[in-house]
Image 1 (cartoon, helix red, strand yellow):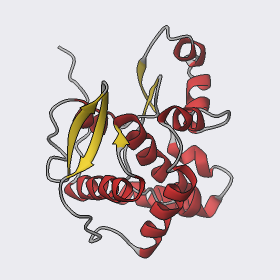
Image 2 (cartoon, one colour; image 1 turned 90 degrees about the vertical axis):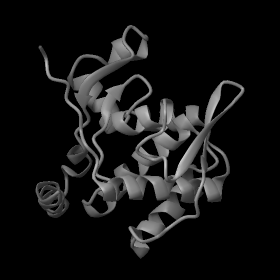
Image 3 (cartoon, one colour; image 1 turned 180 degrees about the horizontal axis):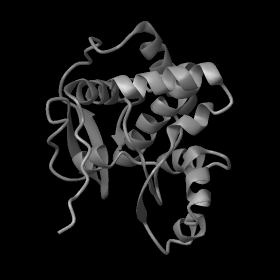
Length: 191
């Protein structure tokens, strides 16, 4: 019998994801599930590019509409369990909308974290979910490169497959910067 691989999120990760969704929702308005998932990924991507340190340190899988944190995707798609203290899901015209049920709590956030949240809201907050998918799939993005390197890009783009178990290598964002690579490795090993 094959053992399922499940990545357990820490309480700090859950708290930071939950409060980030609250912050994004308060500033942007209603968030669809897909838009929330894309903004979560973009926060991790930009944080690694900027400092070498992930915002959430989630694992992202290579899916058709990915990159996707499978644990957060499941939580936003079915009965909310991980994020139940932070958000609720409603459906509007067949689209899952994520709404906060408590006020934003900044205990898990540095000033740099808030600045990055504000930057993501400014740059991506008015984009549609479809535009954010396009952004995360851009040429030379970690999603694009992982799909290309593993010979599944065409399969995903032609909708022959919808998902894979492949993890996106976030360290590829900083391959050009030895200092950030060291910071990233040290962070990953410590967490």
